[in-house]
Image 1 (cartoon, rainbow, N blue to C red):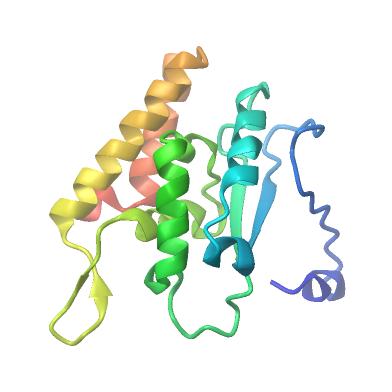
Image 2: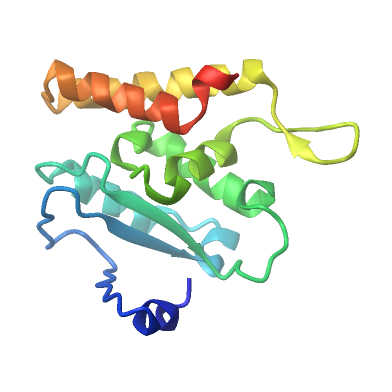
Length: 175
């Protein structure tokens, strides 16, 4: 989204490149902007360092908003863009607990999920996924996020809320 749109609406946003030196207030989010060039060149190293920074933060659960920059004029849905799918899959391979960090605002989890679930082409040539593939993917990302929450010594209530948020945001019950 163009920053000027927010300014015209009177919304002040503080965008940052790294959360390394940032202390978040409860409910605050970090917008991680990933430029098209980084996606298309498969650059994940600096983002992996960023996730390592999150590991050292007290509570980054549900605070991360992903933003794929440079695709505004692309008519495809985010999950149809192979480069984004590949990039996000590589991140998930290195950070299997990614969904622990993701905010549920603005369909953030749903978009990330749709980029990592195996897709197939429907009879009319549209991209989609089977309920079996979707359920399997959701269960895997939920297990990894909850395991990370346990490692962080989050309470059972927090672990439950995390799992519930992932299941809800990814549409598990409707598959």
